[in-house]
Image (cartoon, rainbow, N blue to C red; front, side, top):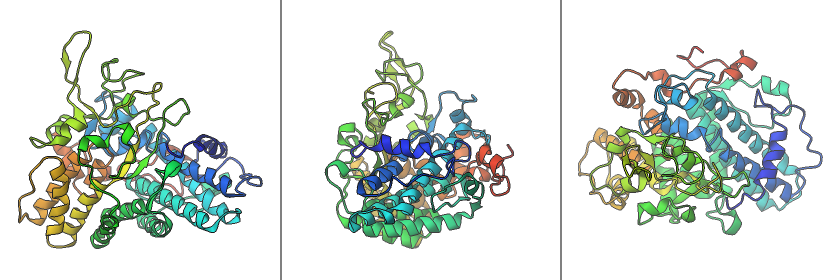
Length: 480
């Protein structure tokens, strides 16, 4: 992480005040008399909000489960088993599932970190321009965290100030998702005004103006405001500071992190400091030993399905850069057909401690969303929509889409393009839900009626219902 030197101390300060059960409130009234006094204090507090993105309940573990394993893209090695991610993969989740509990806990801890900055920054002695930038950064982060929550759970508690007592936490109730989206939009609209176009040196990797605009465009697309989505995504394109890298394979090496196509990445840094990523350990095929990853376990999680392997068109250069169909066992010399993703390769410093970042937003995503927004806002694709999607296809060594496609056919072409372009990056499930295609696609994937409309959102963690049964009710369709 370019700016992670202070993350550990900042997160320790945050964790010391958090409840282990309600997760919306600290154990005691927060003692802030000797903190949040100056720019250095506030920088540490802002870093804590960034740092929580890498936690197990956010992008460190839970997010790829709810966004990829849930979809037809990937699967868990224990098909039909009772591990939390296998239950999620097979749509057999109970409200006691550990992944959703972690996601709820850690995302609200991250929101607490953002709210703490917002509640105390005006009392700190610091430069006004830096104060405004810090506010913009945490409003972007809070918006991103709420975006992940509302897409995962639907209605959620909307907490906009630091929760200072357990009793305050008990009083937090779910609000309509429209209200949550309104707050996300407000936070991003404010953030984009004060965030810089780019950073240099140790601050590379922080939220930028382009990140706020791109996320806002995605939010508008998600809620079906296609004209606003189109206009906001066009602003990202017109900034001119992002571009598609010439070679798709160069997107993934850890040495090329935060490249010119990248808009926002969750930063990880190996080296025994607690800030490394576990993706490649988790994603290496189970029972592959040291044939795929040389240090630590091979988890067999988030592995490509047969449908994902077959999704690429002949000649698509992205396939070889995105996945392997198996590995050669060094002991036997035999090929083992067990697909895994290649996007997160690195040799860990130790088990679960690698340099791979998680890409949240990149320019190809913006181009494909822009094409989708144009198509949905009008009566079908325009020349601009074709230009956006065909730029992505050209890089993949594929021919342009045929002219004069219908609106419906173009929408399906975008769905397919997003699946193969953004595979294993945390988009597929939410893309399917956004377009209302999750039931059709997933039942085709399972070759059985395994998925129903209520599965568009996940069950609320039972721990949250237990501590606040009046304010937090279970989502329809989930009974335990």
